[in-house]
Image (cartoon, rainbow, N blue to C red; front, side, top):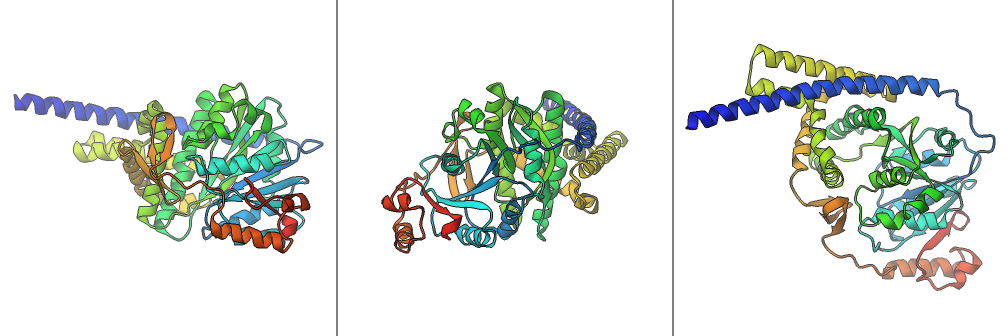
Length: 437
């Protein structure tokens, strides 16, 4: 009896590894084609013209703490080659380390309309969404551009966004991005994973069904589209807010566009533990948001499945499958490096197998656990992509030290307009304008 059970288990395991290995190789082939197709499309759109009257744009930057590259990343938004835009920053409290960075940049670029908003403790599970809601309320323009604090862009970034929104059916858009690493090995692994693994999934999705999501490092939305999907408040309890924003825009009948402009996404995690926790958080979020798609994501790990196949069932056939999978994986990485203009990929080819092992392990880990840690807070994952803080927040708007800070600003005449100074300092949202810093 045991022999029969072992034989069945042996055959079943071999079948699973054959299917996943071949499926992975097929996926690499599809992704190579999709990347090449997108590259051709990019080249054909290079001549697209700016609108005669470029629409004014509001840039929304939610911040929490100051990573090492924060000043470098934020400065790229102050030097945009664009005639009319404003930048709004949001932090929870006045003692956030990002405040000093923003203040220095606002002082250095006084010609740029920039404002800093203190939101207080968020009543929403998703603190970023609460910041976005406060900034959107204060924004002056009809196109809202949202970027993560670890994103940096070229001077023509806003020009390309304006070109994308020329089509009236476009309600939201997003950008491809290349991973930018620090000196840390784990940062390099995460960066090459962004460029050669995650972006592969994006171009494949675009080719098969069109873009029905947006990507957190860079996304933009028209205010009428935002109202149509219920505003930011409707996303208050969703973890993958970038996916939800684009998905809801698509369901509301708007087109979600993928810009040909590639931005930089900086991999700021330092050390194995920090990097792996980041991967695990993303995978657990994806599993809750798109459970069926998360299972299908397993086919994107062809090199890992082929390696397991070769280890468990060593033979010339499994070795040939491993060589074919590795070759296809490296060819995909090369094609994406051309698309994204990521010059670091070729010099780090040798890191790809290790990056894929880490990614595969975090995908498996995503099937377990119901909690994540995000910005030093622990959250419980719920069904449908929702989540909640494990420990309820204290949501009074101002802490005592922040009240004292704002009171001093009011006393010295440095806070807000004359109308704002007439209001007590416990207003729901406090705004520091560029002229008052």
